[in-house]
Amino acid sequence: MVLPLEPLDELQVQILVDNVADALLPGREGAVIRRPFGPGVENPLLDAPRVASAVVAEHGFACLVTARAGARVHRFLFDAGLSPTALVHNLERLEIDPRDIEAVALSHGHFDHTGGLAGLVERLRGRELPILVHPDAFRQRRSNPPSGRVLPLPPPSRSALEGAGFRLYVDREPHLLFDGMAALTGEVPRVTEFEQGYPYFEYLEGGEWRPEPHLMDDQAVVARVRGLGAVVITGCGHAGAVNIARRALELTGEQQLAGIIGGLHLQPLGFFAIPETVAGLAALEPGLVAAGHCTGFEALRQLADALPEAFVVNAVGTLYRFAAPTD
Ligand SMILES: [Fe+2]
Image (cartoon, rainbow, N blue to C red; front, side):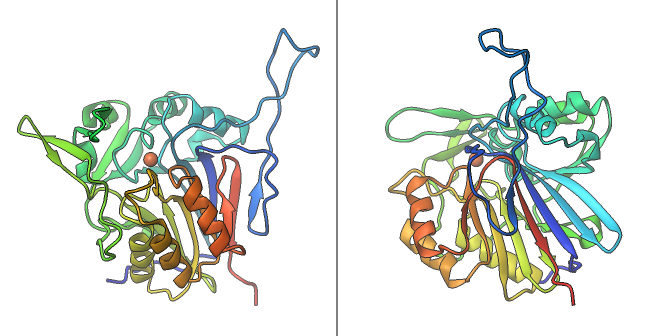
């Protein structure tokens, strides 16, 4: 299936929440590290009236996507991080007005991607926003590994979202945003043998916990940039990085993967086939691999080795820019 996506003149992806914040990262062409230290906060134990404050990292993911075609520009938030505070703190540090956000799309229902919505609604002061989400994101979930350390994974509350001013668009199919300037992939087919989910995810149905390794709500943002190819942004990558990248090429009809950005979920070790995933991505010859959030150190290391030109560590504050070549 090829979606009627409009080739963009420019796509910008501003990272707002990630597990990493590093003001000393060098950046590279097309990946600028913004270092917003001002205007500063009071700190009585330091010998200055005000001290610079920077962006913060947390376990989670959020980014602001800005798509431009000609004079038309649209902005939407993809995921919201974990805490009610990090997203809005970083928006402020990066001097982004939350009221410029026109819509929200959620990669899946896990709370390290939805928790920041609580802080956002306070800044929106009653403004209504559309929010796109897969129906399974509302399932009650948990991780239940053999160690016995059960981790509840509470979903967003449908009624609370509506009460807070969000207009829900619940869809399991691919969904166009802004007349085709970008899209959400909908469910990602699990075509590779080595990306078959996490065996200890469960969801509650009829009072019983049932296995849910595949987490079918996991979806990515895709867009086309004229002359460059497809860009894909993944929240946690539960569908598998190679499955997601291949789906992005299929839905955009592009041959070239200009970039893959976000969490590739190759933690914990032992469940995810890191060498196969790295080889699968490398075979697609991506222009940029900005792996972050839940990718994990070992996978980051192997990706950096295999794709030294394309790889960057994803970090809060990084602004990725894909601009169509000028003729
Ligand atoms: Fe995540």
